[in-house]
Length: 171
Image (cartoon, rainbow, N blue to C red):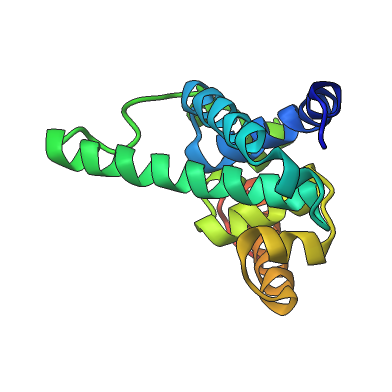
């Protein structure tokens, strides 16, 4: 039987990871907070099976991933119904960042990656998950995870080099 103390300890260790994963998918902190709360409400309801599973952390991140994707789809449907321009609901100010700010550039390039690449590189390089755990979270095989991470890193590297060369390309 999972006690309330064990549950609280689990949530405390994982809440930041779940929030960052949701935010990386949704690119909106408020929506990510909502998803994080929903995730841990579901974990509480299924605490026996989740906390006693082989990979409770991956299981929880899978729930977060699915809820964030659902929220993203819902937001996209609402946006298409209201004809709101894409990206109008938030702005980090990153568009005005100079090319010397490598962290901001990298963040912007990561946010522009295709979903699978962005999520895989976030889980690996930011959260520190192993390839096997990422494969479980994304419900795919390890080879696909490696390919997505490799492609993401290559694309970011190319974009950074291009930005540092002021868009002149490689000669």
